[in-house]
Length: 219
Image 1 (cartoon, helix red, strand yellow):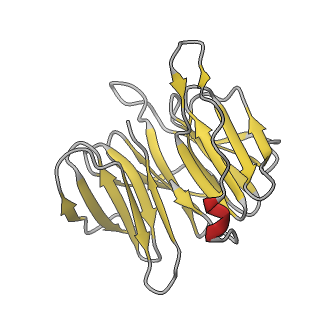
Image 2 (image 1 turned 90 degrees about the vertical axis):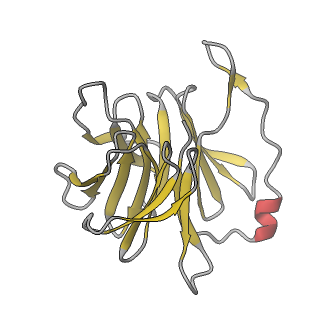
């Protein structure tokens, strides 16, 4: 997914504790983190099948957030005030306070003929939440005014990654294995890379920034 503003040094990342033993869901199998987001010294991650969203302070190795009972949380983004996540099963974007309280639904995408348009990745930039779906839609939601999201583009493909810069939106398309770029208004779609199926995400490192954000999710 993405990496937010961080004060955590490389040494801090290198000292991430050994992951806890994998948990088994009621349906069997092993559960692994699905999406991650780093803000400051806190690493957030989702567990899709377990319905869990966790935030762990990497300095103290203490969980500062433990949300459970969620409906297939897929993506996670964190700002200075809120935590945002997508519910894959319902195509809903939700928001809560950083301590997990006050959870609310921001919007739900209308179902398609063959089911809900699964939101595959989200990105928050400049007060707007951008998203992509496995039906090929690129959309944006104004976090300040609310209302309904705006559909910017329909690529017709399986989009599973998004990154947004000051002037462009970058996309990864899983089935045809391409990296795409479009304007913030959804115009001028161009193919930057075509390398076969299986592309699972995209990240952009802007020149001179030293940091970057990125997004993506598997299948």
